[in-house]
Image 1: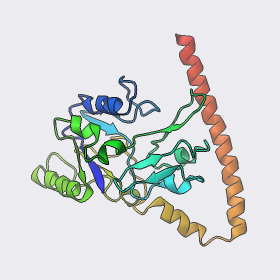
Image 2: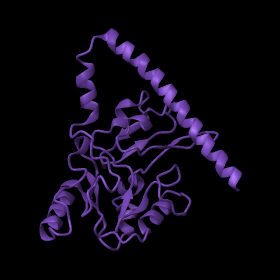
Image 3: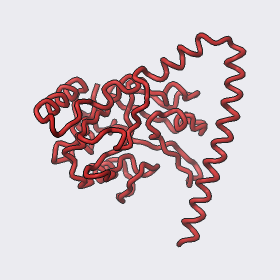
Length: 249
């Protein structure tokens, strides 16, 4: 399975990876500090380093498990892909993602979920991801997951003063196809550090399998009510932000 190794210590913040991503995916070539429906990857300065965010392409993706219509699939290359033709617009994937990655096209009349696709169209042709190809500093490396884990351990061992002895993504939620090494604590980089090591779909199934069906049904109703209330609040916040932006123009 293919993966990316992101070495925060080596990143200089040039933004070439983000620009290459925009070109490869026909996205607007403009800078952003936050993921959005038009920005699959972003570079964010934190303290004296730059951290890149994108979809983690989990080995056991929660988005895949919660989607009621199979709009998300995990591919053999490591990519987690989205099929807009199957999507119902429920946005369960947004609620379930432990890394808060999927973004919704709020301003579109035919909205879709958008996120990094791990350059699937390039990788199946034997190419690197566009971001890895563009990086000239060794901050983003593409390859087989096991090889990149070995490379991460090698960099940490050879330069112990430059890295925390930990590979983020090696075990988080069962492992991801995007791995990080850094000299700055991962929590300070904005990466969730409280996520479980075990795949979240497995944890959910373990719990649900022990609960009587009538309790599950009641829980589903309560969850639905909570989700609807939260989504209304989220939509209201978004609309208010858009209104303020328009008023400021």
